[in-house]
Amino acid sequence: MKPTENKKVLDFVEKSAELAQPDEIVWIDGSEAQTAELKAKAVKSGELIKLNEKLLPDCYLHRTKVNDVARVEDRTFICTKKREDAGPINYWMDPKQAYELTSEIARGSMKGKTMYVIPYSMGVVGSDFAKIGIEVTDSVYVVLNMNIMTRVGNACLKALGKDGDFIKGFHASCDIDAEKRYIMHFPEDDTIISVNSAYGGNVLLGKKCFALRIASYLGRTEGWMAEHMLILGVTFPDGEKKYVAAAFPSACGKTNLAMLIPPEHYLKKGYKVECVGDDIAWIRVGKDGRLWAVNPENGFFGVAPGTNEHSNYNALQSTKRGTIFTNVALNTDDMTVWWEGLTKELPQHVIDWTGKPWNPEKFDKKDKSTCAAHPNSRFTAPAKNCPCVSPDFDSLTGVPLSAIIFGGRRASTTPLVFESRDWNHGVFIGSAMSSETTAAAAGATGVLRHDPMAMKPFAGYHMGDYFAHWIEMGKKVKNPPKIFNVNWFRQDKDGNFMWPGFGDNMRVLEWILKRCDGKVGAEETAIGFVPRAEDIDLSEMDYEISAGHPFGIEDLKEILKVDKSLWADEAKEIEGYYKGTIKDRIPAELWDCLETLKNNCK
Ligand code: OXD
Ligand code: MN
Image (cartoon, rainbow, N blue to C red):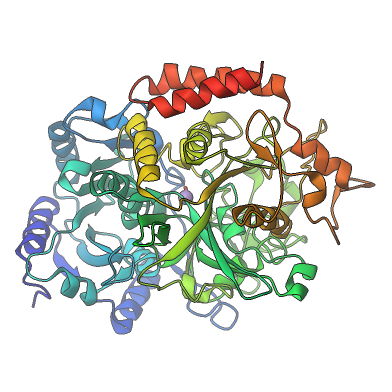
């Protein structure tokens, strides 16, 4: 029996089945019994490897094909009727052509297979923020991951009722042929089509495809925002709680910041940090004139390498049960998982992410091809596992934002932290963000690229219009959050990181939140307000920049410095990006900010 009478849902499922021709259709109901059955099926087929039940209960390992390990930005399209509406930095395809092309590829591709229908909600079912999607897929791996990452099952169909609208998602694994891989978005039709991939970011359609690309488009038309941001809450010793949202490009530490453990002396004073979300924020203007945010996801799709007890204890704990690992290494001594950075000692009996025995003697930190785990290997872990998950995680109203933080990976130029002069200047700072590329997307790593608001790969429409939407939102908020920029990645001339990052970022967060309350001063510089070094708490700091060089106030001064000549170059670079890449639709307010920056750096 079909679990819904919603004709639009039934039509979508029928049309998808007509095209892909599966042998059977299974509706995902969200029950534990069905989930257990699917896990057993995936283990039997070899899609999942069951891990040690004692050490990692209900955890599994999955390996993708070696040609399918990251998001593929050059095969990700925004298919609007008018090319210019997708803008200059999205790949565009005519919708008719895109439908024809993907239909051709997907036709008959589920023969002999099961098509699963996943009703899911981004956001708590029934909240004002929540939106429903239906994803059809031929992959059990996708079903099981969506089950962790979103709220899945009959409750979503019930919320949809007989006539409710939803985002249609069609995923067919086909032959995982990289040449025929397409991730298509039709924002004007509320539709996503993904073929020939089985990597998370390309196929868990609720995540980047819906919650960012389609949702950013919806947000613009409906007056809200979908952002690539973590959300965290800080509780002060007096019990007051404040929330912050922060946008960093992929694999730049959003999960680490979202789950930060403050240094010991902060904990002793009673500070607490709680995680509301690690990747995506949906933000609306509340009745009180503040911005309110929810995390529409229900789990973490985090980068595994580098995660360990010290770097991110909370993330590691989150992966201890009910987790699906993708492309990490398998430790055959005890059927647990391993990745570079998990332990100092290298395990001796390991199968690498491609399924081959790994030779620890050949491991060379600097050569990614010798790694046991893929650099973009991931864990899909339920948010409720996280020891510091916020009690507001399931809040229907979301949390009010005191600050928005932008950041990127910059070896030079950008100071540890600075504050914008006002909302529009903050939008300018976000629009001018650039960062060194990481393994989260296919292509070279370590190359500096512009990534406005960390949304370069995720804005579902013209980037100039997206900037204008930010400016418009600023006009609607009576009490806007203050906007900051941070850079945890400054390097000295020998390439050593000058700031410890991780838990010590609390010191910067404290300054930021004090600024929001007007409790601390700052120095006005050419680029905005920068802390006075003595206003950042450096007590009990334990970091050596390099051998015999413990971090001190002089180092802090160095990474707070604003070098006008570097910023004059940066202004030229931003101007080149605006004029040469975005080209049009950039709001006048941002050109004014650029002019001010140029003048300030003369
Ligand atoms: C992610 C990404 O997976 O940004 O979150 O690539
Ligand atoms: Mn992300």
